[in-house]
Length: 66
Image (cartoon, rainbow, N blue to C red; front, side, top):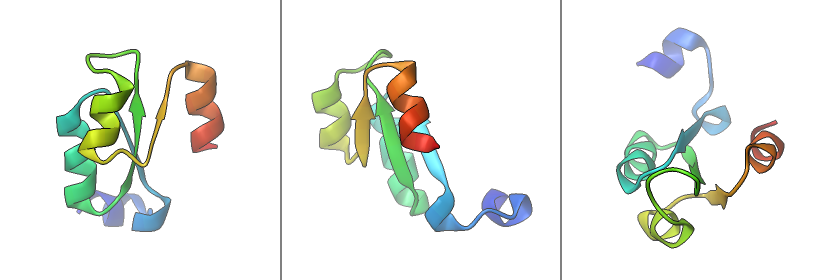
């Protein structure tokens, strides 16, 4: 799988997405997800899909993933 090839542990991987499909894909892969509320969906939908957290700005995203 891509995580193994990249040498990244599953607990260190994060999927960033702007749709429920992105968030559900992360869950299916067993990794955390950050929903971005400036894309196609609102924060409520991203949380409902199972996002670990949701951010509203690029600055919030940077703080969350670093």
